[in-house]
Length: 93
View: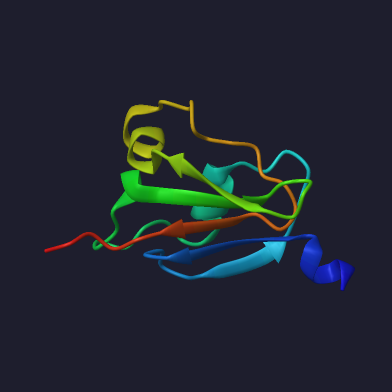
């Protein structure tokens, strides 16, 4: 349904996994902060943004989330699009 196509999601090592309505102007950082931030086990610079292109293929884009949050480097603080999924893996021990 259109309701699900117009959502953005964040999964993985966040304090609360979130599926929320897309809003114009949202960025990666906005969505991660709405999920309560990262857990202590997160590997933030291994974050991926999954996005469908016009041909229906899913592409993965690297997000340097630690650099965004800790250093203010906004190069990979991508503007979100409806149906985007951000996945933050846990680090290896």
